[in-house]
Image 1 (cartoon, rainbow, N blue to C red):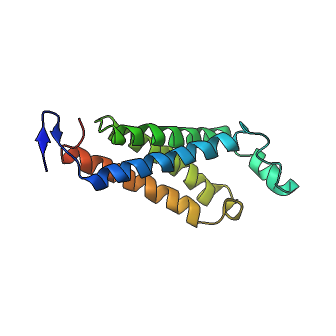
Image 2 (spheres, helix red, strand yellow):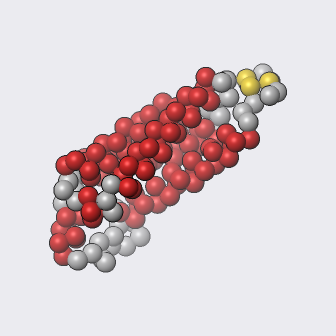
Image 3 (spheres, rainbow, N blue to C red):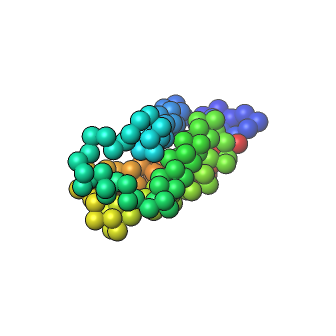
Length: 144
């Protein structure tokens, strides 16, 4: 690995992972924007019971969704740009997403409406892996 004034250059796999992280989190932001109705009624295709359940999601859970997705995108962009502020931003994302997914799994009673355990678990694991990657990159001197 080559070094320069700003530290060690990351391997190409890190850049690929950072691009994938940006795309993953951009999709999360899109899902959030869809869920709050930016592109029309997000509940239009739901039956009345599902619609009532979706409309009863507490504001703090919707806020956790916003925090998790937007900070995930910002933190991933930080990784792509090799910025030291990326890791703590990704921790905030993980906390927001853990709150959201925890509510879905343990509190809401709507787990099946959200597609079962697989999606919440996958989202939480990916967020945790991004935090690990960010701190791994910082420890290796890839972030400046």
